[in-house]
Length: 402
Image (cartoon, rainbow, N blue to C red; front, side):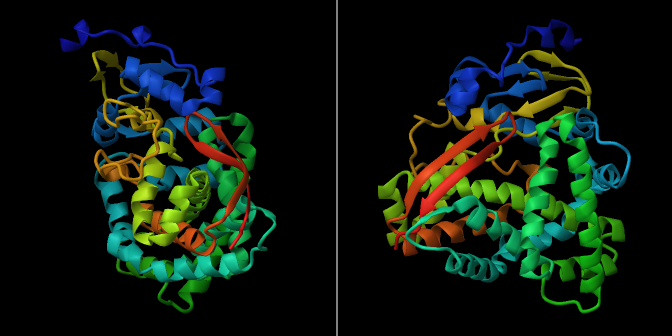
């Protein structure tokens, strides 16, 4: 009966993510909208702009994964790629299956589990920088940001470092699922097929001589009955799908935001203990994930509006992070901000990013090394693009000056 008194979705204010205002100043536009609205509507669905509502909706058991609807929008045809997506954790809503699938990987990639990767990550960072030319302009995305996470992934699955380029390229391809553009469907499908074949071969090779790597641990968990063979495969594919592309962009965002502030850059080089808090502010100020997707599992009320079952809902992280009710002067980049409210870059609850601790270590090690070894690093040229879903770094040219 309570729903009768609520406003319908048709009364929600319209948000245009294709407007010139959003495309040129996305975060400022979101900040302005968040002062006026808690909830709005775009062509893709319901948009949540308030920090508390975003946080609560990410955790709300009445909201499930938005991936099934996403696959329909994308128009992914029946085949290996869609079969993988349907059986991966992305398609499982809240409940026993999702909880069970997360347990083995959460144990291995929690805060303590991820710390064991720091040594290898540090080695990858150091060796990658040793390959880079100094004192001349270089493409930091191609030569650094793409290489770090894909090389770390190769360590995780005990693969040759030479495979890193394939992992990086394929991750960028399959992440196009989030463009919601049917024109990318065939390329995405082919990318997943290539990745699936690669992972099948890596699992086969790894089984012949289990080691001290992440894939070996997942195989052991499978042999113990914690995962099925398909679930093992899907997790290893999922890590390649989500980690390398997202991590590359987040590394690039961190370099740009910190290097464009020389005083902070030099300060971090002098005191690496400040790097974690500086990165928290980077992820608050300029998040890679501008929103995350959900779907209503039942009719719900949201800020006085009736939202029917099956509706796409998007907690808008960019708006939440620039909401002045929660982050005073959000346009000011301040590495001394209090830790709370926390940034929402990695989601939360049973939908939180399992690799968030390892990803954070990757970025920490890159920034700690760069600021110490290259205190006079020159940021020559950079540019971003912003979809409703992501911040993407289109260009990052720099010069490594020691």
